[in-house]
Length: 484
Image: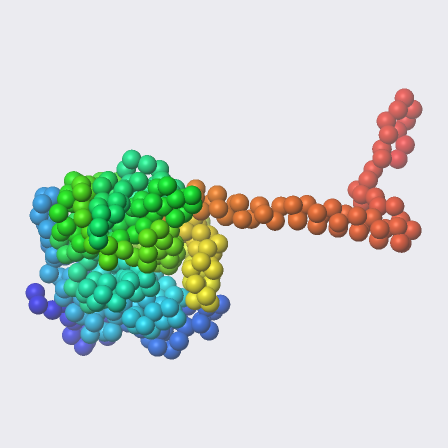
């Protein structure tokens, strides 16, 4: 197969009518929340509609083909590059759907969209296994490209960013470690020792997403370069390590609830006396925290919007199931059982609410930068995965046995959704920080309420009143008959 499957003009019109009909007569651009519509350009609206059709008509039907082309067996699956992916990439570029993720107000290398505009597109990409990579908008490459574009030297950009932007190679981000509590990044322990004009790396990393793909040529690695520094936030550095550097061993790939996510996968990697040129340091020695914070903020928004897309897809499966005339428990279709309609309604409310949270965070980033939107990003990071898991679980329940099997994508979607509560910082970290920051207002709130109480008493005195509860009863019981 040299080009993706194309439908003729008559079937093209029929497929468009089917797509629009399934959305209540609305295209993607028609469904942009009103509160965000003024922030979306006409070009972005047009592109959003193209993204929707590309995902629904080409990527989702191709997902099963891509999965089958990966093959069987660990060695084969992690050496595969399904040909349908290159066909989809070619088609995406023909449609102008390429590198949409780099926000226009921060980078010149992208397609010229804002975080908000790309967020709307990412929602549709999240409905498909192949769509993100097909448009060169797949993690971890998106975040890694932002690192190169924002912090890289010109030499680093020429060597690594250019082929990544062209979709010629892939990359991995190595931060988490198996031997420490990596949710606290100050614990990162892979050692980085300076030796002349090189750094020597020793240690272990895991959940190195993308490392299994044979096209992965560059690792972005966080390690401890200055353990004696008085500031725990200046002990780490980020350095670029070519994947074929001697001393690197990919020990194994990790599964996600039994799914191997081949071919990119999640690697468990050992570094043994790995020598890396000092010129590969990113931004500067001891500035690792600055780099990862700049990387992870936008990435969390991308994950959140894709998760909303997955939730929408799960709701579609849910609706299809409860309207399947072949499925009639107790003599009725599932939608005739009230509990199912309640679950549909709750899913609709929860998805729409979560979407507004993410779009608000995207707008905050667009207005300044990710650091400015830390609170909003954290809110989305916590809220969206929990919502998606609940919606997917309702669809699974409606499908029964089919929902937990390979006969629907729901089990895979749930597994990936569950990891979103851990990746890029577990929920607990974000909740703790949100709680701490919110609690900073506690003393002021106590003082405010006490002031308002005193002010109310002063007002009562001014009107010749003594402040009294409007439901004050003062009913006294005694030996005599109670008096009111």
